[in-house]
Length: 229
Image (cartoon, rainbow, N blue to C red):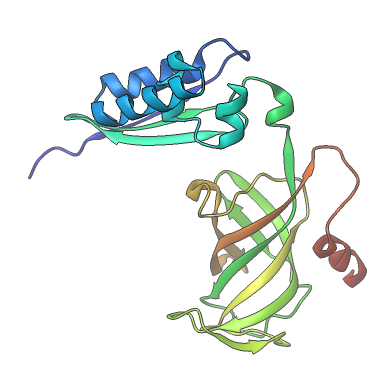
């Protein structure tokens, strides 16, 4: 059995227009993460827009707005493999207005109840572990009970959940925390729920309601949670 490859995570940061995307795209190409034909395609498309030198930039800057303006607006992710390593490269925006600090005012998650002795209703507030966060989180609204195999909706607005049930739930953290949808960033998109010194549930985050750090405006989910106190 061969030796398992080392996973390398690289985040490229720097001031706007410092050449982050160009350097990153060139590095990906040189390491074999993208083929020559694709680079030639980007070079042709960039030349047609009068940006012939942007062929490496376009490896990561895919949205039309980014290509037209020549700047990175959102975070880009690229994964590739070499003979020795698995590599994940993240290219970050250079201007803070394109990636402002945000916190989760609430989020919607698909949750499976594994082991709870009683019934779980809206307002339940166990401890949630997500990545390094360890924060009390309220089950603000039980939106629907689902089949945990197919995901098919079984019941709208259930009054309670018990062990073995799966559901879509609106959740509100008790303190500011950083989470992402599982589809966008898996490490911050799944969690475990702890209560009574045991893991009572696990879940994946489907969508996040965000607000700028320090901003007082909250989402409907958070408002519902406050009313339920």
